[in-house]
Length: 51
Image (cartoon, rainbow, N blue to C red; front, side):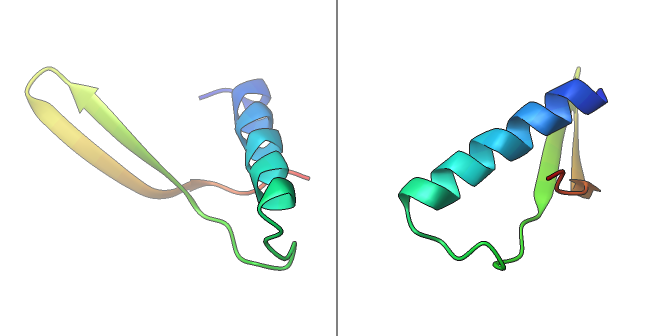
């Protein structure tokens, strides 16, 4: 996953937190579910939150 895609995901999360009035200091974690054929991988904390 490229930096631009990560940044877009973070901006979307920031918007969601803003409209739901979630405090900005609330921790955020991004997990990724990868499906490759018959295999499923769960990548916990796949990338940091970008401001």
